[in-house]
Length: 328
Image 1 (cartoon, rainbow, N blue to C red):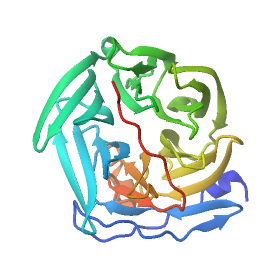
Image 2 (image 1 turned 120 degrees about the vertical axis):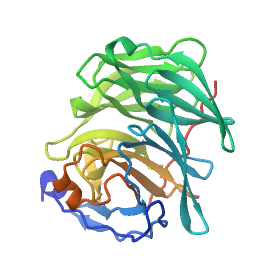
Image 3 (image 1 turned 180 degrees about the horizontal axis):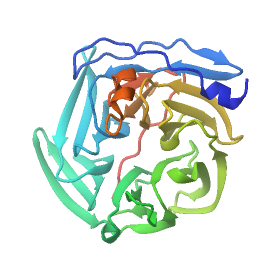
């Protein structure tokens, strides 16, 4: 069986019955093997209809996630076996959320903000402008490196020249890569010496040497080229074994890749079309959470995938790494 055949293995239908806004933790997965490629079927853990679910990240016992189109920040937690979700309405579209003392850092349409949270009370403080507002871009996917610097890229609806930036609250965001179209998945190897980066339309993953002390990247080169038929790569994360997990918009799947060999070694079937971000979480970082989309999905597709926009998860038998906190 070749790679394309493996990628065409159908999704199993979901899964858990629950009321809107509720769910349960995923059970241990039954894993299927296809020519050394592991196959999982994702389960609904929080049934909702996010227009553009994104930005998944686990910190301090909660899953942080965004609904970009609805301008929402969410914190999802398990309490007494039930899933609970707390929502904050934002003034503009968010693209990235990362943890920070007393709250979060948000990269949004017009800039980078600090949001302090005290119960139901929140305070937003703008730290930096979006340097690309003149071309109509917004901040998109991002994460913090091990030193607590925020790396975040931009995206514009039309194919314009966007960029990847590094931000430390010691001045304006510094441009690290230009000529970007849709800045997306970013993560680092477990030893911190490599940075992996996705500019979605290139249908590739680039690897960079990473200088953790100085926050510099060098020697960028392509390590993975995605075949046709799997949609386009979006958000990503890495596990403790150094393997990449990549969400595929339009592909109804999350794929696991070996960055050393460029080999696809696992596939998560997700019963919805557009998959956007992934994050390891749970008490032992052994659950892979998956965000999805309900906007722009034709009625005929929604009929097939009624849980579009929900949060999904699997227990893949491998753990992730702790998320990094903004430190500036």
